[in-house]
Length: 117
Image (cartoon, rainbow, N blue to C red):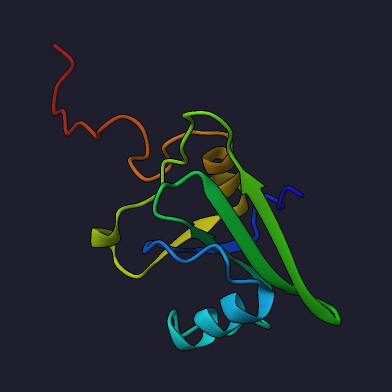
């Protein structure tokens, strides 16, 4: 399951208990993140060790739960809790995060140059 590039994605910055299933995570979306779980979006969660991700979303007639567990010493580069409770991104950025890239820092810094010579 890989989302399209323009789908709305919301990451919960704080770690959650990975024993939660679709209903518990949907309740967390509504009560903790103050979002509509029935909206066309993906809601992503990770654990404290950052080696597991669960994504919950509504599809036509039911909740879907997708999960990924990394093996070995690999970890997801997740946004810090200092960025707020929820971090918004696109499906393209989520795919990069799932592949191990740091999507929060967004690459090189911007330069404010005035001349070339």
